[in-house]
Length: 269
Image 1 (spheres, helix red, strand yellow):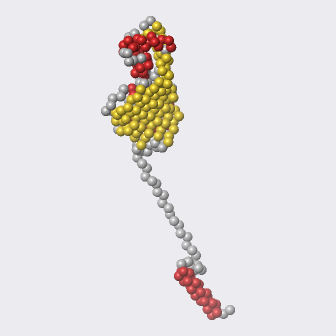
Image 2 (cartoon, rainbow, N blue to C red; image 1 turned 90 degrees about the vertical axis):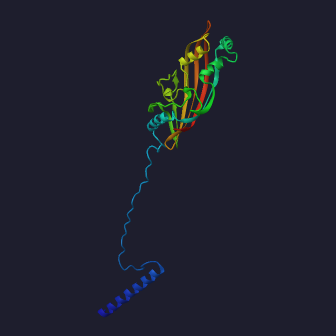
Image 3 (cartoon, rainbow, N blue to C red; image 1 turned 180 degrees about the vertical axis):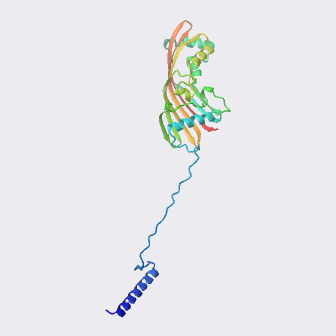
C-alpha cells in the first residue's frame, strides 16, 4: 500500500468522524465517536449543618436528670407567676368511726348544727373543689404551685411524649412539709398530723386526736413544656387514713380514704 494511498485513506476517515460528530452535536447527543479520551469530572460536596437552637429552648426529649434540674429551676419562677388552678378532692370511703359516729356527730352538731364528722374532717383534708386564678384568687398555701426540690432518684416511671413529661413518685406515709419524701419535695398538698390536731382542736376541745396515719399512694404527675417554659402541671393521688381520737371519755378509732386531682394551667412567669 503506497504512502499516498494511506494518507488519502486517513483523510477520508478523519473527515467522516468530523461529519458524524458534527451531526451528533446538531441532534443533541454529543460526540458519537470520541476524538479525545473523556475527562473525569470530580464534584466536591460541601456539608452544611442546620443551626442549633439555643439550649434554653431545646426541651423536648430531656433526660431524666436534665428534666429534674429544669423542673426545679422553672417551678421556682412559676410559683411567683400567674396561673389558673383547679383542685378536686373527694371521699372514696367517708370517715368511718363505727358505732361512735352518733356520739361524735352529737358533739359536733352541738357546736354547729350544719356540720358533721365528715364535713369537719373534710375541711382540713381539703374535700371539695377549688377553682380560680393566682394571684387574684387566694388558694390555701398547701394547694399552691410549689418550687420543687426533687432529685433524679425521686422520679419513677419517667416518660416523654413531645413536650409532655409524665412520672410517678414513691408512696409516702405521714409526710411532713420539710421535704423528707419525694412527695413533699414536689407539693405541700397533704395533711400532717399536726394539722389534723389543730383542725380538730380549733373546732372543739371535746375531741382530742391521739394519733394519725396517712398513706399517700398512686402519685402521678404530668408536666407540659413549650418554648422552654412550663405551661401546665397536673397531679393526682389517693390516700387512706387511720386516726385514734378521744371524744369526751370514749376512745374512738376511725378510717377514711380520698382521692385528689389538681391542675395548674395557663402558667406565665
